[in-house]
Image (cartoon, rainbow, N blue to C red):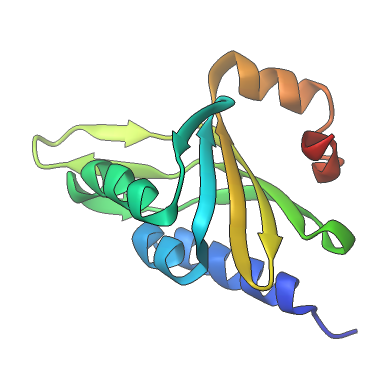
Length: 139
């Protein structure tokens, strides 16, 4: 069975994230007018704003170890969800561990909406089955 364009794009994005290249993944797959949310609060209203905000965090990293787990896709709706368990080090020697959930809605090979969750909101979504049914976040 051949992969759909959506599945191919998601796989390439995950490969870049796992390789510790989050800005490359963002630049390649985030739609110019895409929206970003953090725990259901608007984080960025377009790719330009989202990249600038993320770049502040990523530029502080001296190394990034990507670790994306629990990828689940709903191909018919071009929706995917995954856990981000990556870590990064900073110049002061501190190691920071990410523990987040990322839900993405795609269209024509680009992310048009990304919702990032952590903490209690992430735990509630997981308990309600989002990793089993990624379409449930869109409802």
